[in-house]
Image (cartoon, rainbow, N blue to C red; front, top):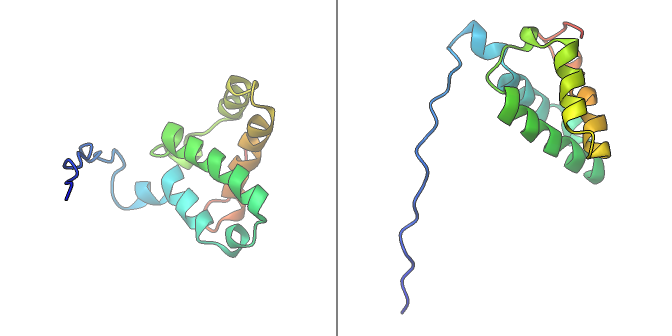
Length: 109
């Protein structure tokens, strides 16, 4: 019987978000709220797939940042940086709108 080599897991990342109020206003918290909403669960497969790619992008880039710290210029820069991927770039500002639709996150861009 052949044995597999042991799996090496990367070290756990230490979160830079604090506890309490700050954690509630991070993009990670907002994205998780959105993923547990009926709106997310009712998306069509293609839309879900496109949105999921953008949410992963947001989590990697700004996940620990405060939602209120985002500016219009940040959104424009993110879209320009991904201009070569037209469909993806189009969804970037669209996914930032989720903060307007989730409870507790009502500020607009």
